[in-house]
Structures are given as structure tokens and as C-alpha cells.
Length: 364
View 1 (cartoon, rainbow, N blue to C red):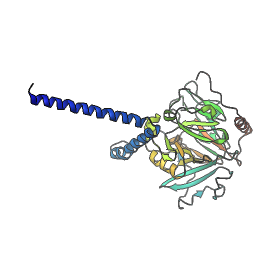
View 2 (view 1 turned 90 degrees about the horizontal axis):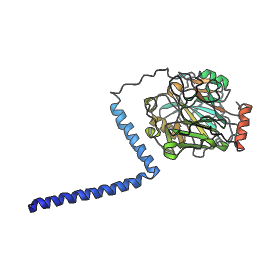
View 3 (view 1 turned 135 degrees about the vertical axis):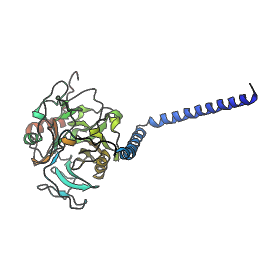
View 4 (view 1 turned 180 degrees about the horizontal axis):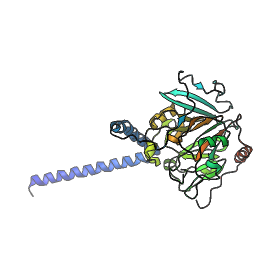
């Protein structure tokens, strides 16, 4: 072999060896970087923000707008948003606007317009033992709809009549087929309403002893201890994590465009102290990013999306403020000292505080 070709071959081999070595170092560095959960979270959030910022806007013109098969929610009581955002309007018959979240108080609802978005904000003081949160099921069913058995759905009006609570609102997702399967594990009044040991998608909000809240994304943080929850529902996507906007819906297992695209939404979250729970019912169609920004702005340390679209519903003191465009299978029910929980619910609450826990169903 001529010396020139031999020398060129050696140089090529040296370059390949060098590139292989550099690739190995990069691989090691990335492996170490992504072995840290926080780094994985930040990367997923960054990628999602890039996709939302550039791809969504770029292809929005050519993408057909999905047409809802069912009527959107109806705003029954139209709010007036002509006050500064620093002076939210209290819904008539609500307690005084001079809020003191460090003292016990009934559930309150505020009308707000923040970041150009209108919404109702329900504030639940978790330190007040009279503020009891549970789940309501369609047709007063003993268990939520599943692949094994379905109890159907029910109008929101019927839910509100059956549960004389301070607040009744839409809960988690359910399937659109005849079975109306409720998505995710569900705990209400310290007992399982739906359970599957294989549940590993979405984000779970749970209330433990003393109404202490926690929020867990199963695929990133491990499965919640549902049997330690008085109240628990799995939904999503997650919006806020440790005070920062956190959006990784596909990582959580969400692919439905009705969830990922723009739409009417409901969200739930809690403050960093864990003393206040915020339920927000939006009065306009918005993106997950917009929803997350509002939840952060009102003071959420943790927050997640709930069912929305035609399922969005809200009633306060028996009056319906947002009427869903479809029947529902499950609702969130909130009692307070002015609209107290029924005796069986209070008894179950005391038993849970004294150590009684939900029993995990066998063969599930």
C-alpha cells in the first residue's frame, strides 16, 4: 500500500476512534444526567413547551378544529368582570370578601378575571374539619363504573339535588361508550369506589388524615398509597409541580386530542402550606399552558387538570352556575358548616381520622 493511502487510512481510523470515544463520554454524561428525576422532568417540560410554542402555532392554520360531539357547558349564571383583578367579585350570598385563610371558614367561591381569562375559584380551607370532601356517583351507585359493571350516568341537576352540599363540581374522566367506565382509581369517604392494582397513568390528588393533600404522578413518582386516602381521584395532566409549571401529558399517558387541545377546563390544586384547596372552573376555552399559568398565579404549589369540555359543571349552595352539556358519572362534593355533611359521612370521617382505612378489593 502506498504511504499516502496508508497515512490517510490511519487518520480515518484515528478520527473514528476519537468520535467513538467522544460519543461514549456523551452517553455516560447523558445517562448520569437523566438518572436524576428532576432533570428528566425539566427536559420533558422544555420539550413540551417547545412543541406548544412553535409546532402548535405553526400548524394551527392547517389543522382542522375538532367539533364537539356534545354541547359545551352552559354558563347559567353569567358573571360580570368589570373589577380589577386585585378585587375579585364575590358571588351573591358568599361570605365576606375579607378572606383570612388561617382561620376556619365555610367554602367560598370568587369570580375572577386573571391573565385575560375568566373563571370561578372555589376556596376550601382544609384546616376546618367541617369542610369535608368526597365523591358522588351517578344514580347513587355503590361503586364507580368499570369494565365489569356500569351504573350509567346522570344529569348534573340530579346530582345537585341528591347532594345538598356547599359545592358540587365535575370530577374525573369517563369513557364515551355505553359502559361509561370511570378512569383512574377513586376513593370517597375512606372507601374504594374503584380500584385497579395496574393503575399507572395520570396524576392523583389524595387527601390523607386531617385533610393533608398530596399529588403524585404515577409514572414518574411511583403509585400513590390509595389506601391512605379519605378522598382520592386520578385525572390530569399535571399542571404545577412544586410551585413550577410542569406539563408532560404524553409521559403521563394522555394522547386524546380532546385533552391536549384547547377546550373548556376545570382544575384543582393546593397551596404550599397544604391548608387551602383551590377548585377552578374556567369560563372560556384555553390551552393546558394557559390553565397552568392561571393555577400558578392564584398560588398553587401543586395542581392538575380535571375532566372538562362538555363535562364541566359547577353548583354552589344548590344553584347551578355551570351546567354540563352531557350527563356525568362522578362529581366532587364539598360540605361545610353551612351545608353540613350527612351523619353517615361525618361518622365515616371520624372513623378515618381514628385509623380506619380503605380496604383494597381482592382480585383487582
